[in-house]
Each structure stands twice: as C-alpha cells, then as structure tokens.
Image (tube, rainbow, N blue to C red; front, side, top):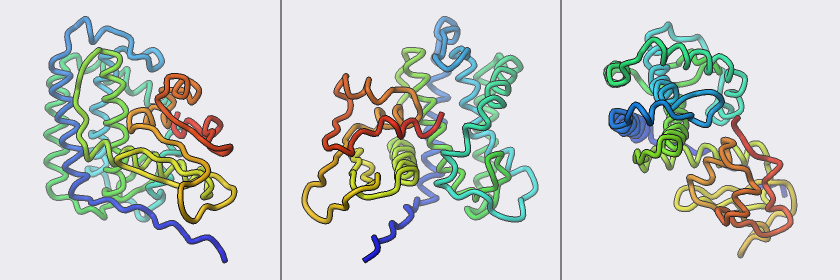
Length: 264
C-alpha cells in the first residue's frame, strides 16, 4: 500500500493579517526605544549594523504594499512551500538594498510610520487571492503574508540578540513561522521515519526509512520554536544546539545536521 499523502497545511488569512501587523507594531515600538549606541552595534549578519537591520525589517511589509501597487501578474508561479528555497538567490540584492534604505532614511521612526500606514491601508481592501509579483515568483497575497511572519520573526530575533533588546514575538506570527519552516523540512527530506516536534506549534514527519505506524517513533527530534527557527535559518548550527541541550535527538535517523539550514 502506498504511503498516505500528507495534506498541505492551511493558514487562516484573517489571523495571519493580524499577526503581521501585530509583529510589525512590536518591532516599531522596540526600534523606537533603541539608543544610538545600540543602533551602531554589529547585527551579526554580514556587515550590517543594527540600524541597517532595523531598516531592513520595514522591507518585510513594504514589499507587500509595493506589490499591491503594481499590476497583478497573470498567473501564480510559486507555492507557499517553495518560498523558503527560493530566497537564497536574492541575498546580494537584499544586502545592497538594505544599506541604501538605511542610508537614505536616517529617521527610523518616520520610516516605520510610513511603512505601517501603507500596509494597513492596502490590506484593508486587498483580497486574499490577489496575486503579487514577488521577486521570488508570483504568489497569492494570503501565501505571501505567511512568508512575512518568517521575515518578521527571524529578524526580530536577530535584532533582540544583536541589540540586547526584548521585542516581543506575536504568538500567531511565531506559530506560522515555525510551521512553515517545519513543513519546508518535510519537503526537503520527504519520508516518515523521523518525527520532528516543535511544541506547541508543529509536528512533522520526514526522512526516508522505515515508517512507524503506532507508539513512539524510533527517531525523534524535539526543540523549542526559537531554536528551530535559528537552526532552519542558519543562525545556530546543529552540533551547537545539541551540545547546548537546546535540541534532543534520538535514533539513527535523527541527525538533521546535513539537512540544515533550510534558508541561508
């Protein structure tokens, strides 16, 4: 009997919209409270400073507004689970654009205010199935907003660690980010021999090998959401997470080191 096909996870578009706006609001308040000394620190992302990282975070939502201003493409090109693997090719352009954005907008408060106003106004009338001409490939607005939770959560965590800040993570945004990256692992390593648990948000099965049908699976990986996100995006190495007891892995197929990161 062939293995059962896994159903694609769905997201509530209304909740995702609220989560994106809530997390961007959290970041706006957090960036407002940063001192010049904090903004000048290295962001630990290439040569970016914290100021450049803070400017980059506005791009997470400004790309939504900008694409809603553009003509709608004729056809969908990219599924949601393809997105994590389509981002690496744009790293150079993103770095150059970020430096230019930070240089041209020294007033971060004004930059955040404009970005928040624009996305709030545009989301008020845009339907979920509206196609956006994203640089990674045309996607529906509903799918693209799920990717914004990844951008916002990942870079909020970057900002907190680099600046010593304590910007909160919206629960729904954190959940969506965790789930999308967990599902991307299952796409990269299809199978059902290993169960990856990221409580309280996600459980996925992956990696080729004997399929378990009941009881505790023979290969189990478990970690918390932030550690998983850092592993999936290359902020933390697999061995480091194991050594620091941030992740537990049991079974001969529980080593995910060769599969990570999922996004560069």
